[in-house]
Image (cartoon, rainbow, N blue to C red; front, side, top):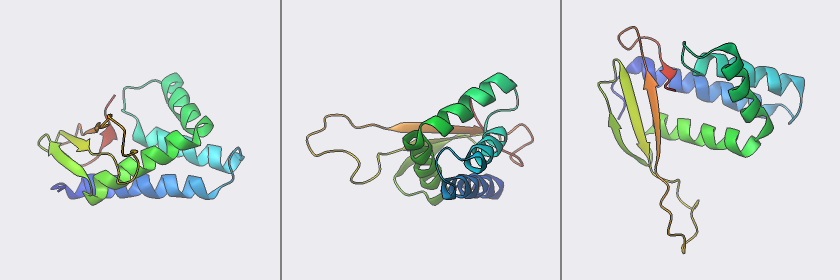
Length: 131
């Protein structure tokens, strides 16, 4: 489980931001603005504005991707279907996520395991997604 309270709070903040964005209609200015706000706080500090716009554009134009990101953030925060957390949780935390129940068909040979990494440059106080 998450040892770092600041990381847990940051995940909760991101989840709340995503949920807020999802309350607005698809293609609305409000939803777009909420997604951009989320993206600015989510991507690493060293990412340039063009890449931030590209990332938020992907979230705006692909609701399925946006909802899967929400599911993954919720998995990290809750610990549900998290296989492991690597890193010291002061500079880095990498979550290995198992597929959510019911998402794979029974005859699927694909076991999609995802990794989400978060980094901190101030000894675990503030967090961003890695790369």
